[in-house]
Length: 261
Image 1 (cartoon, one colour):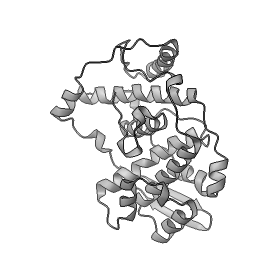
Image 2 (cartoon, rainbow, N blue to C red):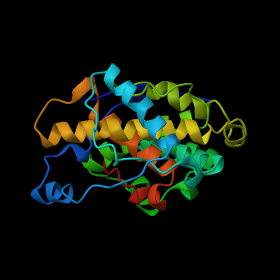
Image 3 (cartoon, rainbow, N blue to C red):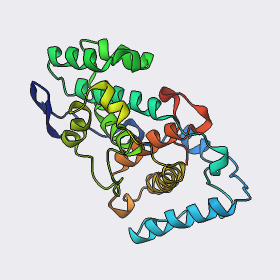
């Protein structure tokens, strides 16, 4: 599956041709992976806040005919008073990094990439693994695919920063061309200062919903069934990954984020 986007930057015009494909999380499950899913489930005494958040998420699932995880004492996010979301500055830096990776995955013009890197100080915002990819003259097709999908994480960062009004139901990919304009139409300083970090409650609501949507995707894969609710499982995975990072799930660094369900 491919996508084509047009990115307009100040004094820069580039037509980018997609190289997207399925994320590696969509590979067939191994015996070891299935065994890992068989660990004893949680037994959480949920707070009123956690229960209400779950109810809101399940209402969305029902509306889209997505199966619901039924164990009433498992699969909850921590209550808000136990969560410290990433700062606006951290999310701004991550958004810039992910946008750059997507451009690199599209094999954008080297001169353009160099100008973007200089304008937004990209290299200092990349993880070690990302920097290795960014400096690689001949990345593999899998590396390009992985970086291409980071556009979905960038989309989540834009939402968390208030640049996008809504995280719509994840049944299709984001509009990359529209998303990159949020960055390219601003200077590094403007992009940082004009960001308005969403409330912890809003972020946790989205993190709880995507947890349940990802559970439904994994459950369908385990049972060799079609993905329910017309969900795009790769979009769901990327959104889950990004939101888990934002809520500091187990305080994991970006390259080590897990999306357990």
